[in-house]
Length: 91
Image (cartoon, rainbow, N blue to C red; front, side, top):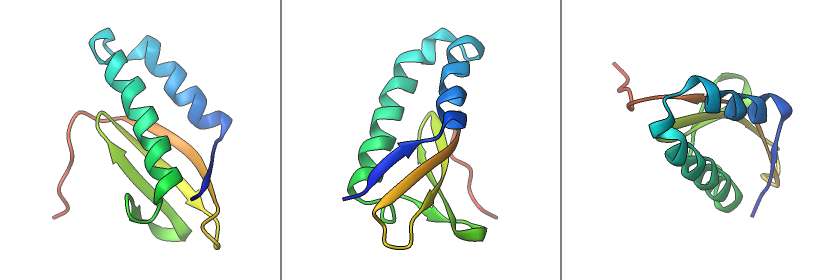
């Protein structure tokens, strides 16, 4: 189990969505935030993909989040969250 810490930048990202994203998505955003937090608490590696520089990404539509995981896996720092409308496939 990991401790999940949401950096101010990630909290601001979510807060800003309340004014910039169509209101029809507000409930889905709230649900996605809760799911991201839950998944990162339970298994941050299993629910995410690795990225360069030791960072990771998790998707829970309609959101994606960029985070850092401590070497021992005990701490997750959510750094950035953004709104997506679909999952993209790698070429």
